[in-house]
Image (cartoon, rainbow, N blue to C red):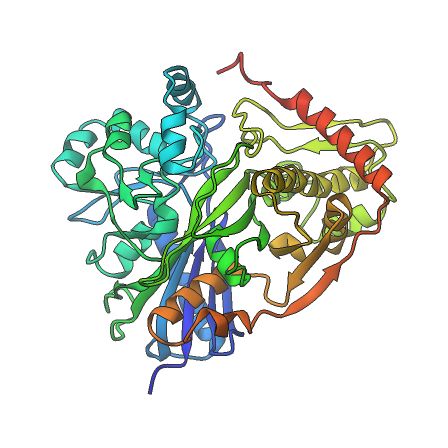
Length: 503
């Protein structure tokens, strides 16, 4: 008899969540732990890769206890991860050569400017679907190779491995037997040709990346290997069978399996994805064309994506940086305590601006404050900034695709905030739908893993499990919507290029 549960490790930017799902797609056990953030210089963001492993395994154990099950009751393990974050480790010892460089890190901004000046961006975009920006893995990996003594030589000899966080964790879980990634994560590196489905020799030469350090690229739903008993509680080998970058996993978990369906995930950042099917749609609006997933031998599916760098982490900044709130839930009550923003806008360009602006030199700005401005106005401005940024991306996506959205499926931590969700519907002018299970990144990777081992039979079976929790309908009149949105763009224009003369 097949074991009755699938476990998903959702390794995010600020922490790791682990969920245990049963065959009905219901959560049977859950655990979470935060992760230390390191900011060695302005614009630099790092993680301790070994801490990621320790935190993840601790949370796995807690989730299994919460579910009341033993490890050998798992049919499979799925993995979803913060994308673009770079780890390099020693192949023999499985120890990292230094800290991981996080996707938010901007240290390669000047190098990206040089590449653009050389005129290579069109070539890069045609092959990868991405823009030249510090956000992606390729420039971060080049920086590590250029700034770690002897590392490029070791990489050329095949002594070290490169990977995004999925690769790093799977290598650890399998005891070094699987150095792999999936299509979705590979498509975020600036090194992978998303149409030919291969590491691209011209791109590797451009960034001076030795091919010997790269992982094998496999479908998002397939068996990559089995857990090493020494690593995974002494139990039998459990198939590690699903990998997807967090946003692609959320698209899958939201059952957006058909072209034209779209979702937004509110996490550290926010990421709007629209399924475009087997067609890799080139963007004229500076959105990203990315691989959504590959399931077994089925054709690879693509998506348009708008990456918003700072949404939930702005709330964390209110809590940890300013001490304005004690926990994230307080923002709802503070915002609810004021009828509107009183002209206060917050541009959360704390690590530059992502899509569709792509300005690494933009910086955060709070504008419109008066003597009457209070904590409620600031909290509301922070929440509203998430919705404004989402509209920026949705508008660009509709122009690119020619599809007019009639609904947006939303998930992630902030989707439980009714003030934000109502304002999101108001500023978009379309219905916002929130599912019963909002941790759709973990759910998506669990579904991918379960499909690979036959725990679930098909995507159609999975789609039937999607269930609505709340629907928010627009209440704002069109004139007010457009007036608020015009002022948002005025604030964004003021924030752009702020740090250009400082870096």
